[in-house]
Image 1 (cartoon, rainbow, N blue to C red):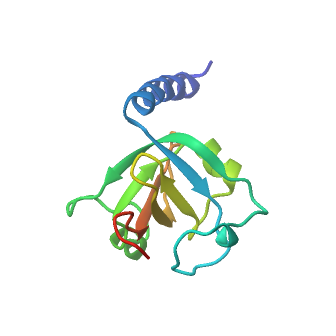
Image 2 (image 1 turned 30 degrees about the horizontal axis):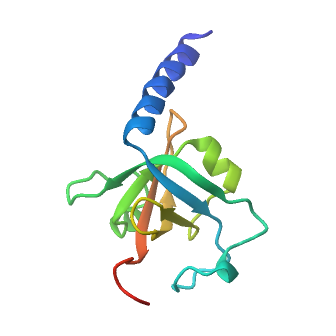
Length: 136
């Protein structure tokens, strides 16, 4: 194993442990359009496979978070998820797709921007689409 491969293996072992302990269960949902409507099956892009009930890290942004992508997309984001690249690739996750937090009353987010990561766990910046505590 090369030095970089050993380093990545160590990083991923630690990240997997953190994800298992502190991660949240989510669904990664391909989306057909940019419509800002409540989640319905009709709006889901069924030509791409969803990743259901996967564990990822969720971070609520604070005002002092450093930008690491297009300023506008990062600035309008309320939070970000740290998601393994293999899950992003499995779904073909892209801007405007949805992420549903299963631990938080099906709170729904829209993907604004997917950053880059040298450890294959990019930040996926999101905005809340639906507040689970209000009727739509």
